Structures are given as C-alpha cells and as structure tokens.
Image (cartoon, rainbow, N blue to C red; front, side):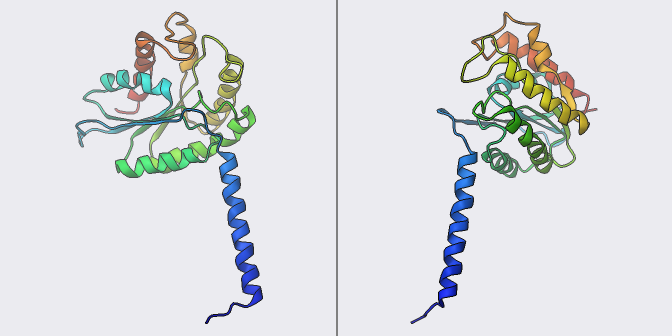
Length: 226
C-alpha cells in the first residue's frame, strides 16, 4: 500500500485548485454567442505552382470570398477561414492554429478581419486582444504579407450588437496597431459607405455589394502576388 505524505496531498490539492482556477478564467474569457459557427474552404484543385492566399474573417468575408476566388483564378490558391469567434475569445487562436495545421501549406498573403462579432467585449478589450491576434496570424503564416480589412458599416444600429459608433471605434483602434506594425490596409469601411443601397439586411451586403468588396480585396492582395 502506498502512503502519501500530508505535504504531498497538500501539493496535489493546491495544484488541482490552480488548474481549476486557470480553467475557470479561460472559460470566463470566452463569451459565447447564441449561434456559433466556423466556415472553412480550400480550393478544389490546388495548383502547387501558385502562391497561397488566406482570407480570415466572419460572414462578411465569407460573402465576398467567391469574388476573390474568381478574381485570383490562375494567380493564387485561395483559402477561407471564417468564424463567429471574435477577438478577445481565446478559442480564436486555437481555431486558427488548427486550421493552418490541417491545410499544411505556406501562405503568401493573409487578408484578415474579425470585427462584426464579439459585441459583449468592450472596445478596450478588442484593442487589447488585437496584437495577440496579429501574432497568431504571423505564427500560422510565417513570412506572409498581412492585409487588414476594416470592419464595414451597418445599415441600422443594434442596441445589443453592432453599431456604427462602435465599429468606428474598433476600426480606429485597429488602425493604430496595423499602422505601427506596417501592415497593409484594405479600407472596406470607406468603400461600403459609398454603397448604402447594396445591403442585404442591416449588416450584410447583397451579391452586388459583396462583389464590390471582393474586387477591392483582389486589388489589395494582387500587389503581393507579382
């Protein structure tokens, strides 16, 4: 029969409490939405002679992904990772790492935005999480050119969701960081201010609007595919 010294039991108990504490903190940092999803797409046929491009974002990005695919056909293999997981949520880092490991390719360009979710996080929390988000992108795509896409305006403010005031604050905070880090900018916010009639609902754009977005994204990405 193995007997443990009382100090050993105390150490085990302390370790258990610490583990529970860390786990609870991680859980509390993740503020789930009612409906959550991830959407991952890779090319049907990967041309290994072409560079790889990754679009990272949410449903806005998912909607203009098809236009980017068309615009870069014959020039790049285009991948998509879109999710409802927001900045500030520790799951986003794990999801991006898992996606990159599954694809197993090197990306020449990463065009990214995750600004239309996570409204339970304050703008200060969003700002604090942004550098870590960039660090994760650099880790999953070492050496890639990064392009930040600003979050688009909404047609109608939501009291418990996106509002143009909060979007402008988030964009301003992100802009300071990407400018400091010399990250390229695709100003989707300014672009879609010019097309107030192309909304599908209060947040998303119709196919014509998504096409406008996708073509600007193609122009931004194309500069790094020469």
